Each structure stands twice: as structure tokens, then as C-alpha cells.
Length: 428
Length: 128
Image 1 (cartoon, helix red, strand yellow):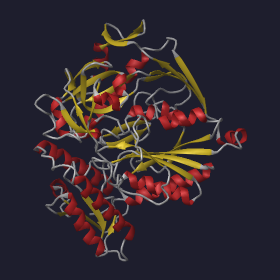
Image 2 (cartoon, each protein chain N blue to C red):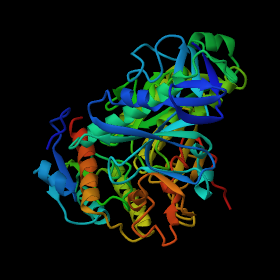
Image 3 (spheres, rainbow over the protein chains, first blue to last red):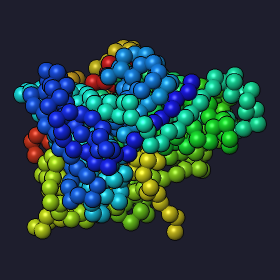
């Protein structure tokens, strides 16, 4: 399979009479976008707002974030099972608006969604503050159940992102990057002496606000399985997850998975990237054991010398992480784990809910219990009162001057366990 | 209560979620915090019950959301040592987080949402 990513970086995003890319400015037809989203009978009304890098704007409560991508060539379309049909994706060419994102915003439940500050201290903690954020503000029909509300918001974010990406069709990309992933027999023939590396991507599917979708299918009950990294880049994995904002794997994190990107870039040079093993994080202990056993069996069948394992969320997912580690290391497959921590205000407390002696190569993406004072913003897209019910925030979090004291756990994606952001921990 | 996919397993549900008690009358409601709930579970496991669900299921931290439900397999002896390690780790993790701040004061709407999410995850497990 071969996939070319065609990247576009716009200089601004504005509302206009038609959706188009002109003079490197992305114009969005709000009426057309609204009409597209209003096809969902569960949406009573929708509006849109734009936040630009450097503005004194806060977006909250954020639920998911989607990167605008659409197919330019090749079978199917991005977000298969939602926008695209069910054709297997990951081939041809895909257009990417690389400095844009779509954070879905609004209160589905009264907790857990996060903050994006476009300037100030919190802006340093995620990449979204450096992007043009187009925010669909979805109002559901009265009395809508929470499952349907979440689904409506999820689809609204995907549709908005897809609509934006389609404006790039026919325009030359500013940057292209091509990845070729051979069949396994071909890989072994071409790269006999390179270390064989697989990537185990833990995805969480446990219930309301805790689900992940693969080709549009809720991954509940899914046994560990193999997927091409190129399919992941085409939006084959979509988040319906309401894990704590700091370490939920948002859809954009899957689309632009840094572990996948780095392994693809090194494929055929330093290592042989065998592929991605998707392993569901279930609430049932037997499922966790079964999933980790299957992932190890798949890694052995692929001929892996080493695996990287990333988790989604915290607490029970550490058991999935450690089960994978123990199985793989026992089978002679070297593991590197990526996780975040909740290690207390000073970082001195044990940060994980589960461990295993085999876990001797672990990368941390930060400590969620650290506090950060955020200044007031000139404008809030969403609901300022949501800080009182966002994890890491509290009813006393807002000071009289409008500043907010929160755990960094409230900042969207700051500790993404795919290594999407820059934070880590230094040993003293 | 039964696991749909394995009805022979005799399930016992210990919960502090009133919505779980309402939807699953066979569950055992304890009007305590999560930390105390886990201690009750540990006591049951010492008497021979085996852990079926991870005590920290979901992604709502035990110092943030007030509800948890734990599924156990009724007295299976010998003791579920792996499960005892899990519940001990969950107790330690919970106690560590609870020390960080005073318990949040959630309004009725937020409490109802926490109850619904917990109930949804439990329901998904029972469908397994």
C-alpha cells in the first residue's frame, strides 16, 4: 500500500459566501456547513466560531478534535464508516489541512471535556493553540439521550473537518510525504537485517463517552487485530471517548499518530515497521487478559523483535499496558511503553495504577496533577462555567480576577499518550 | 445478575451508584465513598470472591467522580491472588488521589451524569 499525504498550511480561516481556498486563505460557507450538519435530525441548531493562534480566546468544554483530511486519489474516503463508505482506505493521496483542527464543543455530560487556550500559559501545553480552530457549536433536540447526543456531536465534528479539507482539492500542496508499506513477505525479503517493530495501539471502548470506532464500528468486544498504519492516517479510527481531557486519544491524535508517523519515516532505513495491532481496553479483566494474549500472539506471528505500546486513558488501562508488556517480554519481544502519570502535586507519588517488573523501558508524557494558573481570556467559545465541572477544575477554581487554577489534566490533549505533545518527565 | 456471554458465572455486583441499584435490583448498594467501597470489595475477595471487572474501569478518576461499581464472581476459592493485587493497587491509587483536594461538590445534573456513565459501562460488561 502506498499513500501520499498532501499538506496544506493556510494563513487564515474566515467565513465567506462559498467554501474555497483562495490566496492561501480558507473561506467557509457557514450556511452550507450548517445545512450539512442539520441533516442530522438530532441537531436542533448549530453555529460555528473560529479561534486563531495568539488570540485571547478559550475554547471549552472540548470533547473531540478532528483534523481536516479528505481523499484526493485512491479508494474510499477519509473517516470510513462515517463519511467514506466501507472501502479499505490508506492508498492513493490524502489532503491534509495541517494547521487546522475542529474541536467539538459543548456540554454532553457535566464533566470531563477540556480546555484549549489560544494564548497564555495553557497554550504551551498543546498543539491546538497553534492551529486555526473551527468550532461547531451543536445544540441537540430537546430530550435527546446522551448516547445520541454524543454521536451527533461526533459526526458534526467529522463532517466539519471533511468539508474544510475538500476546499483543498485541485490546489497544489505545499508539502508532500509518501509512505510505502509492503506486504509482510516483501518486507522480510527487502529488509532481512533490520529489526522488526510492531506497534500496539490500545484503544478504549467501555461504554457511554468511553468508546472508539474503527471503520465506523464500535470496537466493543473487538479482539486484538491488525490494521495498516496507512488506514489509520485516513481516519479509520474515530474517537467517541470522554477520557480525561489531558490523555484522551482524540481523533486528530489517531489521524496524525506520532508513533505511526515516526515508524513510517524510519521504515526500511533503521527498522522494519510490521504494522499496527489494535488492542481494545475493556472493563472486564478477562477481556484485558484475552486482548493482551491476542496482541502478543499477533506480534509473534508477525515476527516482531520489538513493540511500542501506547495506552489511552488512565487507571484500568495501565493493566492492559502491563499485561501486554509482560506477555511480550516473556515471549522475547522487547517492549517500550508510553503512558502518562498522576504522581501528586510534587511528582513524588506512584503515578500508575498497575505495574510489572518487565516494564523497564517506559516513556512518560507528563504528570496530570501539576497545577497551572490560567489568566482570564477576552472571549470564551463554549461555556466558562464548565471549568467548575471539568476534571482538574473545581467550584473554587475561578478567582475574582477571572484567573483559573486547574490541574493540567484539564488542558486538552496535553499528556496525549501517543506522544503527540512535548511534555515528559525528568528524573532528579 | 449474569454475564450474557457466560451465564454460568454467578455474578455479584457491589456498587455505590443508586442508579445501578435502580436498574439492577440484584446489585448490592453501599452508601459509601469509592475508597470504602473498594475496602468492602477487598473483604469479599478475601472470603473467596474473584474480581471480574477492573475496579478503576472507565476513565473518571476516583477523586473526581463519586461512583463505582465492581463485579465479582461469587465465592470461587482458592483466593484470587491476582485480583487481590488489583484491588490493593486500586485502593492505594484512590487514596493517593483523594488526598490532593477536597471532594468536588457536584450538582444534581453532574451526579446524574456520573451515575449514567457508570451504569453504561456496567451494562456493557453485563452484555459480554
